[in-house]
Amino acid sequence: MAQLADPDADAAVRTYLLAEAKAFLNQMVSTLLEDGPESARYAHQQISPRVHALETGQAVSFRRFELPPGHPMSAPAAGRPCDIAETR
Image (cartoon, rainbow, N blue to C red; front, side, top):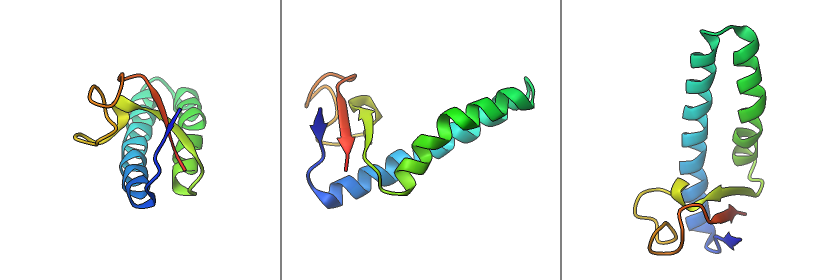
């Protein structure tokens, strides 16, 4: 598993991943709310731990394709799109 070593780069990636995770959480909850409150609650329970981990500075695994556009560790330049990396 690749790890981001530069703390400044890691902070930028964490900020980007957090924004993406929050947007995904909001989209899934509002979409599944149309199916019913149980579905929306389930989506929130499944996705919110990642958002919380990113907010609180915990290590989080992600795939290269999730990196910001142009990031030096993104695919294909630095590896395959589904390679796993981790923030610290």
